[in-house]
Figure 1 (spheres, rainbow, N blue to C red):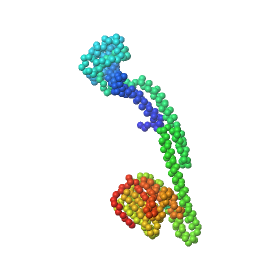
Figure 2: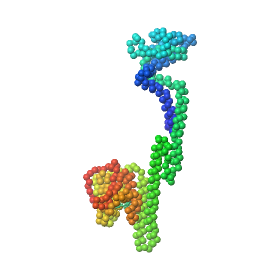
Figure 3: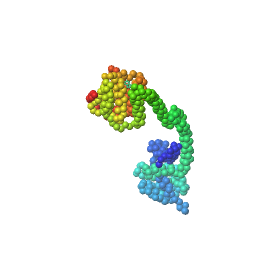
Figure 4: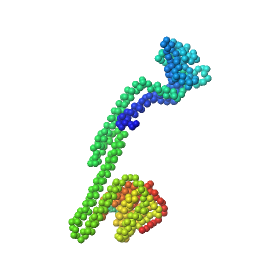
Length: 471
Ligand SMILES: Nc1ncnc2c1ncn2[C@@H]1O[C@H](COP(=O)(O)OP(=O)(O)OP(=O)(O)O)[C@@H](O)[C@H]1O
Ligand SMILES: [Mg+2]
């Protein structure tokens, strides 16, 4: 059965079940504990008294009074069963008023106690002097029954675990139930009021949350008056709001920058189209179109990265990807008087990453490095066996203060450069998605060295001595 959705109802149901269990079984549990601990002042609460009580109830249920007023014991099935299980058990019932021993009583016990009718025996424990069992105990107790005050003499009943359950059943009486009912009612009411009052600030918080939309992401849900159990949840929602706010602000900045970046080449393109007779018309238009295409491609890969969810499943060989990117750049690079070299271990370096992602990262780094490399120089791509890659050039390098900024979208050292300033931002975003790291250092002797480190848990690295393959 599903629990009710309302917290108050749930609490009240648990409360009723829990309190009923406690109310009806706690007295028994407490008395057992006292008995087990053997506390002196609770002498009466030993396990033997449980047994005697049960035995007395059974005998008491067998008392009868005939139409002529004669009182006697008529063994019930329960009494017979009890005696079968306790062969040493004997009992006697003596009418306190008349001193008469009720027929059905044990003669031995009756003669031992009948003469003492003039003594008020409330509760007495005894041992029959001629009983060879030194542990055997008897109890005398005078109780008012339906047929008058009776002195019960019980002997030889030994404790059995089921006596506990038997005694437990005595607490489940109609009378106890009617005592419990108002008690439970009052506490249920208190529980209901406490829950309603306790949750009132939550209702206020829900009202505040309902008014937050994409234009009011700076607002936060007030958590000051909330109960301490709920406050962490609302604070977590506030943190989530802050992250969403950050994300939305970043997207808006990105959109504004993207529009700005596209506007410049489009304006230039329009100007060129307005003068189709210029000698350089075709070359200019081609260059403008290429620039627009580059920006759009980078924007698309940025969007592609953003849409990627976590949990990359495929495995990629870093050396293999590096080689294929280098090969695609080689003709143009050589044409421009530069070279690219690849160093990689002889064994594959496998990481858990999508091939297109590693390709995109390396393409951006190699493209930048080739652009920065002075004529006649060589860019070096070094793949390490521990899932790291260095892309080394010997250009101007990246100033210390720019080493974080270069990974921001649209950041460029100068507007004169051709790109949109998105390549490194895409690479960083992808490395973050792969739980890896990207950073830039200085090449010894001058230039920039971009370093990639893929997460080692994700790497299945075949360690082997580095064998260089230089292209
Ligand atoms: N190897 C490098 N050496 C020196 N500066 C670099 C190097 N790589 C990147 N930069 C600087 O970082 C800036 C940002 O690089 P990024 O790749 O993000 O953009 P971009 O190359 O200008 O344009 P895009 O890659 O979007 O076509 C570059 O404009 C350049 O100023
Ligand atoms: Mg670039």
